[in-house]
Length: 110
Image (cartoon, rainbow, N blue to C red):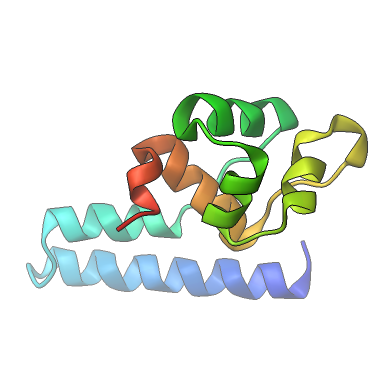
C-alpha cells in the first residue's frame, strides 16, 4: 500500500470512528451513519467485463456518452474495457462506477 493510500485509509477510518461516536450519542441519525459508512468503504475492483456490463445494461450508453457522464476520456473507457490494456478505474472513477452500478444512471444526473 502506498503512503497516499495508507493516509487515505487512515483518514476514512477516523471519519468512520467519529461518525460512530456521534451516532452513539444520538447526534447522528442511523440513516446518516449508513450514508457515512457507504462513503467510507472502498469501491470494488472493476474488471473490463463488469465495466462493459454497467455501460451497456445499466447506463445503456455508448462509450462516448459514458465517458462524458464520468468526466473521463473515451480513450480511458476503451482502456478500462480492454483486458489487454490492463488499466482499471480507481479513486473517484471507481466510486462513480460503484454509485452507477448500485443506483443507476440517476446517481450521476442529480
